[in-house]
Amino acid sequence: MSTVMHVLPYLVAAYVFLTGCYGLATSRNLVHAVGCLAVCQCATYVLLLAVGYRDGATAPVFSDIAPGSRPVVDPVVQALTLTDIVVGATVTALLLALVLQIAKRHGTVDPDELRELRG
Amino acid sequence: MNRLRLWLLAVGGAGLAALLVAACLDLPGFGGRHHPYGDRAVQASLARHTANTISSVNFDQRAYDTLGEMSILFAAVLGCVVLLRQARDEHRAPPEPAEVARPVRRYALLVLPVALVTGLYVVAHGQLSPGGGFQGGVVAATALHLLYLGADYGALERVRPLGVYETSDAVAVCAYLVLGLASVLAGTAFLANTLLPYGTFNTLSSGGAVPLLNAAVGMEVASAVVVLLAHFLDQAVEIEEEHGS
Image: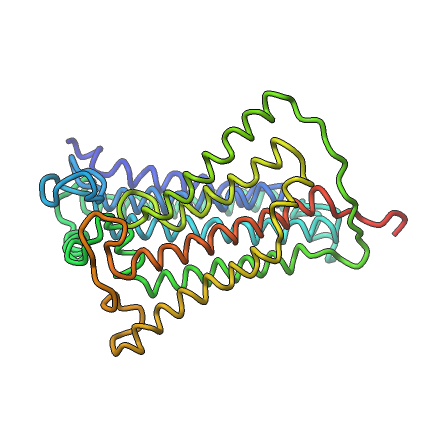
């Protein structure tokens, strides 16, 4: 594999993260901003899975392969990714609940208008 | 103001991008052979007869972290329940039964039992095949909501007594804690998987405490998703603002 292939997955993670940051900073709608935060978090999934990959390896599940017969990818980062997804989903749910309350109390979900409301 | 913000974002973003690229170039190459933690996790998992190494990492080697993860989920559900409660200036209107296209109804009611069983299967086989409490719990909880698509909100509410799901959420977190404390009482460390026999490799009862912790997590996630979706759906379908206030 070329040098580019050795860093490409990491660069994809960085790109996804920066895209999410851009969306977060230019967002005109809080629901959209919560979505952008989820995109930022997706970058960490890509990064973790890329760190754990091993050439020609399969999933670290031994119900249908004999232990040691094939290389397996790093299970530790896969478990971390699972944790990451769960925490990401709960954070998204909590933030959306907050947005719902803001929409009810202030009648808008535009962050700029909210700043003006507060004076 | 807006131009200034965009400039600041561009400068900060470019700086961050440069640092990230520099960091990426310094990381061990993608697909490399050197994974010391992964190799040790696989060894430990096989020693404890758990076929799915990821379940072993989550419910055995890092079981304490999963307790934290469960607590985050529990706290988030609690927060959502508090935030999405019915306010004083709102009232609850029973939603009108809606017309559902026949193919949608037929398909939803056909898939519902299949999806529910799939979810329970994924939870039960968490220690053997890909999946586990987190994934299966979400599948099972979403399966129930096919009733909302296939019939209407009233039908969903009848099969979803919220109090039961809120209680089972709390009971599942307690069950996880009690399983951890059981190993303390037996004289080992909190959540150490040394209490139960490890069983035969690649059978349902293998892995010691892993299937039990996995089931507790499955129950918690399924109830948590049901409670969360119920409160969001209540806001969308049932709760209305008082007129003239």
